[in-house]
Length: 139
Ligand code: ATP
Ligand code: MG
Image (cartoon, rainbow, N blue to C red; front, side):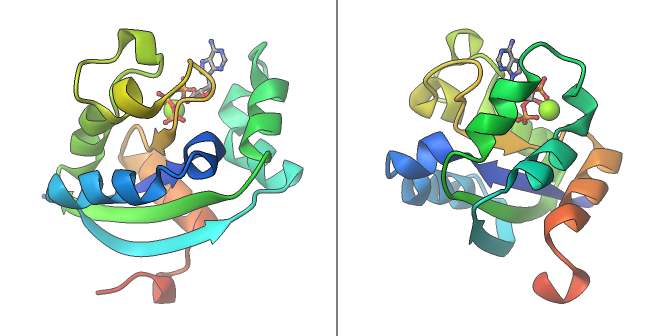
């Protein structure tokens, strides 16, 4: 079944000049980029995006980090895109991520972990809609 998932290249990876390489690896994996935009999140937008984590001790730092510089948001499409992109990213904490994954290669630590990917069909739908409207996504 063809799915869509939301990817974010987080500010740490963009500021290190890793965006091109990460987009290249996404393409090489066979996922199609069907929407793409650079933006700088403001506090309200970052808080809204990570609202499920608002009670967590790391929430304030996470919001600060996500607002710290430009990020790249993209919609990826393909067979089992959600699961495949999670596998390409690796574990949240790069120290626990498998060899060859984006986080193993490009993430500094559990917060500054280079990339985001939706974790299920419902979150994928709401996260895609958080940044893109239907006309932004190529057919
Ligand atoms: P994402 O939602 O960004 O794809 P994830 O699903 O792997 O990552 P979540 O548990 O949803 O991980 O956490 C969201 C984000 O919050 C992480 O990607 C990371 O930037 C930050 N984070 C998670 N756990 C911690 C922690 N223990 N300390 C600091 N930051 C954390
Ligand atoms: Mg998550």
